[in-house]
Length: 453
Ligand code: PMP
Image (cartoon, rainbow, N blue to C red; front, side, top):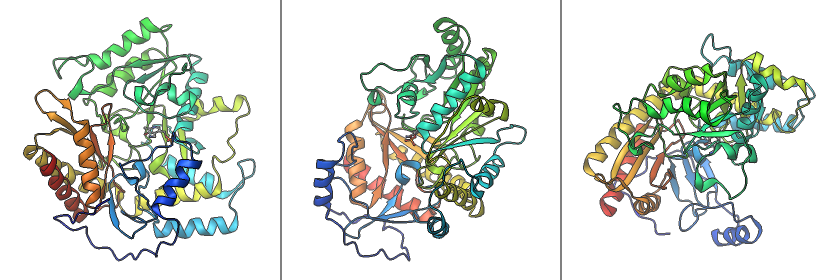
């Protein structure tokens, strides 16, 4: 892959990467092709080897540095190899690298307490079940909702992503991710609030929020008239950074609760300060869920997920045995606890607000100059730019998005892709990104947009 010198250089860093002495890129690729399940796909025409990371930067096998503007898919929240995390995880691994929750160890409870303190006062969201992934957390949350309400139906949104396991795949209403297999019963899919491509063919606000009010019809006509829960991402991530009109969640939550259901917020991408103004994504919409699921940014790279609910909902789990060997293990717990402490002590939510706001402004400026940016969406450091071939027809610019992603990579910038058509550029960097990084990112995009547009 040719390296192109970008117009604006990547901001300097003090970090000196160690010389890489492992297998070459071609050797890595050959091993991967022979021994690893091909369902585990890679990004880019020429897959990129990543061998070291420090804060918002990554290095490849040849020592080339990149700005990581997708954060291991919205996972590295406080920075790669953050020194405080490295130190505390090292200490923990050296002392006790594993024990299960059948014994007491200090960190799980301390971490549960700190997490509970991050929920809005009066929400009673205080009791957590730790898992190893977002898929597990979502399966647990919907199971608890079913047990608590005695109802079966779960409402999920089209264009949502909630996981890749049997149960969570049923909540993932995104054809590209759905294998041709029977899905578990009891899941109904409602339209999402995606105004740029309104699934109902309407326009906001004359639509009178049909996407939201339709949930009542779905509950009353497609199931027994009662539901266990509604689960949604406050901003759809994999679906292409889709944020609904401001009143959407309030309308749906009211309908769901009137039909005896619980409301679950999947905060796997939106949580932990990423959206800037608020710690949780749901707070942007003025609602309070009954359960919150988390993963990715919660652990800055640890295999860690969680579901936090009210005590009365959590109690349903105690009626039978339930166990997760690695859920709540001391290493993940110390990494999660330290990540949360860093988010607070380093003011990273505030940084998401400031740098995210600046990035969004600059993306909106870019949109004025480049017709192929159809829409800029998102909040804080969860941003998306939808690429189209023509802003009037809104024809998805999937190939253009591909060229842009490759073009910025050549210049040392890693971004993500998403959306049903794969035409949404996703910008979700570690929350420690600086204004200089933001300038580099935008100038890089500008340069590539000029060459493809
Ligand atoms: N929910 C959301 C919103 C996600 O983006 C993802 C992962 N992309 C998941 C759940 C599933 O998380 P995991 O891959 O950790 O199972």
